[in-house]
Image 1 (tube, chains in turn cyan, blue):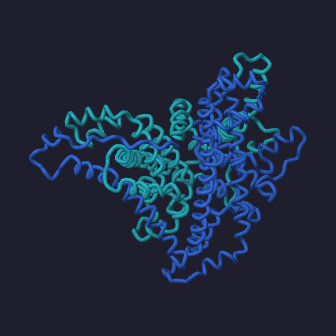
Image 2 (cartoon, rainbow over the protein chains, first blue to last red; image 1 turned 135 degrees about the vertical axis):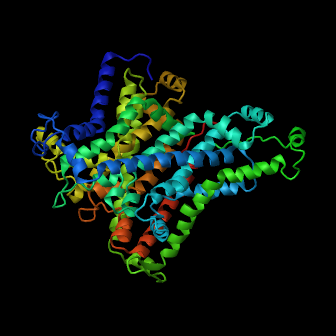
Image 3 (cartoon, rainbow over the protein chains, first blue to last red; image 1 turned 120 degrees about the vertical axis):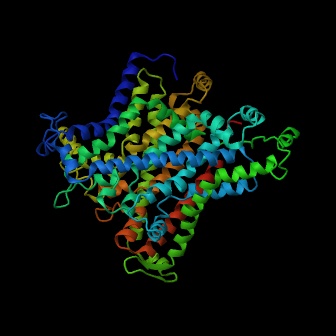
Length: 279
Length: 317
């Protein structure tokens, strides 16, 4: 607000920011370093910020106790399929609602928008029954079909529509004059222009799928089918107590790849999501 | 959110008709209708199959009792709804849900706004701080929750830190007085970065001249914040509060990982209770009834917030 700040004001501001950072940064640091500590050191007092004698033994236990590689693959491929599927479904519908005039358009848009009002938790009981009838319990189908076609993709459709509405008409009209059909205009003109919106939708869809927890524990029952969030909570000892160093090692393996991508591409993440929320 | 004008679509002019002279039925307008339906078909069919039909079914199931294991399904009239009113646990569940929502919204929005105002001071290195505050958003939810569960134990990192300054910390997740507060704090730090970014974008849209004029008029910082900043970013405050309230009603993983609804039911929120009833105790009919209740709460809150926008959302024109 002021043009020039005194050095003292600046120091105070930096001090406040540094203190505020602690609860945001410390847990991730603690997770990564504790996963390298032997089980006995994990509750050492005073707490150690760095492990004395870093060891990867907890990481090998992660793979011995559960088919963790398989579970990692499950989460990864489900998130990728869901993201690509959502991009296709939402960009097609968003484009049509923004740029094509057809009968019943507004009514159909309202039908789809009801999905925004209905948290997926409300429909989990009937969805369980439906997938049970279709013989899809303990398969990955519910974790793919519902996000791609159901309520979670409605928000993506809405965002894509808002973006396509704002595109200038001239580009499209020129393409029409050149004899391009609707699909060609969508695929070759509109989609390449919509890259920022597609990126934002891809980011939040991927994160949503990667974090999904209620649905996997409702629909899946064999460890080989589990996704990561579900697998993380299975590292318990014979008494049901958590095996902390193993859980933290598995949690690090789950958290760090996405975090690394984020640090690398944080501008796209932050601005993409800010853009999405305001449009 | 702005409403936009419908795009101008050129009428099927002579040029277009001439190009398709041989196929009189498939006028450009008809082809457009067809293209529109084909483009929205996946989303429309998906919404019907995975949203609307389940919504109707959940109401239908709430009048039935259904045992998956025995394969029995029979109507029970309004029994499930009568159970709802007689359920001794429900008042506690609703109280916990309300406590969580109100606590999270207040903490999340005020922290998000404070962080955004701080970052809007255009300090060198601001982007680094923004990245750090935002980073938990991309850390896997259950991983984040597990670490906090570790830190919040009786002999965990938080209490070890408190011990250094001579404070004897409670068993955060195992005492009824602190369990819900702990869950709220864990959830707040996880996602506050998202609201912070939205506020930051809104703050950057506030014209500087307004502050300069106010300074000339002798208005202090605090007064400027309440009289200029807050009214001008009120649409964003409304948007983030809707997102945060609806999101807070869906909290599940954090509860399941941190407290399993305990101690003494103090963190059993509606979705967790619904999950327990339907998938732990196999009371699917009652689970469906609780789902209907959840839906009604979300619906009412959304309508109320939407109505409130007329009252306190400031528009420039």
